[in-house]
Image 1 (cartoon, rainbow over the protein chains, first blue to last red):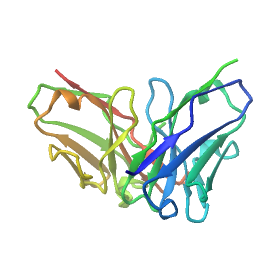
Image 2: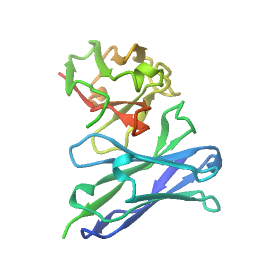
Image 3: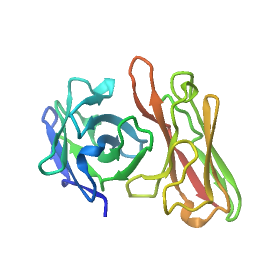
Length: 120
Length: 112
């Protein structure tokens, strides 16, 4: 079945970096893109960016430009999201979601989420 | 702050009909971009409920329906059930300076 499986929870200190992985299975990885979405405790959903698994093109949320990098490894059907210079307000659950280029069909498959805690 | 505004909460008794609005602007919903809806049960990942304004993915009950008009969209739940108690989010694309996908502020549905 189509699924996205994310890496485990992380605890980081302010100023550090975190890299979350998202392994896809059950579909042709390069036919879709991956969006990353985060949710701070008790808050709503925030779109972070999108990467094409076909050619690596990216589109990042303006507020995260310069701190976030999204990549893919087509040999392992895995997407990665790295966030640098972590602050306490980066504490959140981070989700990856499959999204067709152009977003016409929404984000139709989601990972289980990865909790990132930023604390000194 | 999100550019798509939803009511913080709606409630209804079992069997009733509730609607959730999603109000945008001329740079997102009003520009013709599709609206999608997600259901998030407590402690779980969001789930796609409606895509392309009014289409249900396989497995989503027909109690859920979506519509779009002008700069707004709506999600309707008819025959409300206890298992529908969750957070609901609309999502679209915004073509303003910070061109990006955007989520609504979210609505908590409570079944009385």
